[in-house]
Length: 312
Image (tube, rainbow, N blue to C red; front, side):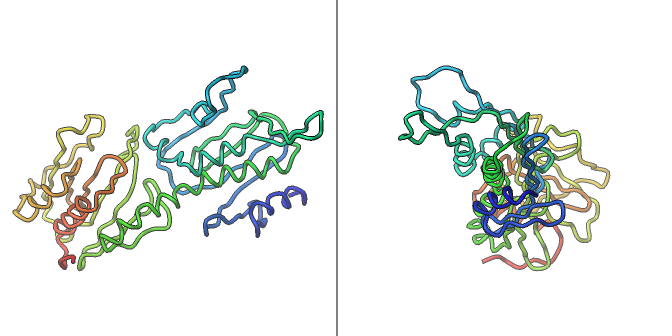
């Protein structure tokens, strides 16, 4: 990497260093791996945790004429995505501010007494394949602009860490171990122990390879000593497109005892699926009602068949 480029990046990310073909930078107490290039085209990419097929692209939408309306993020960007709800969640204030800030470059005034900020609409941003990237269609001559784009990309890539902090108060209420970042379709956000039962709380989009994707919170536990009984419950208001795949009922239906019935009434989940070897209770969207989630955790532990201890 050119010394001038590394120097420009180190001004934004102190301690930035090259590790093989990667550049490592630290933001919000986490290390991010990135690639940057000035040519043949200007490009920046940063790795992100699992996104379960989520895609997002952003392009500047200059009107080419002045407008009386106040500038805003929505007016400036064309956003294309395969998951509108998740895109709205991902583009939090930190991301929006970083993208808007990356838009402007310093200019000069003919009078030499005014500092100008000029709009640069040549960069496009994308989140795809577990990678955040920024790219323009021609070489970039300024290392400072590469550093600007790296700041914007890291802001997008660090969204899962900020999202995980949103779940931490919920984890404390549930007595759970919380993850440092949210992985969609990946590692659990929360791990809850109830005696010998371990219950995992995950965020995911797809229930299977053919699923087009829908943001879900899933509470799951492994079943111990199962007799093969199964159960499928679907909330009346859940759209057909969000229904889970058909369950295998060859082992007979699971009997809903009084404790399970009470927990179901308290949790009111979108779906409840008991398979021969596991339990999955889902909520539509990024759900954070501690009482309902607590009931779902207790239900998953109850149906796991493992010895459990009451939660206080």
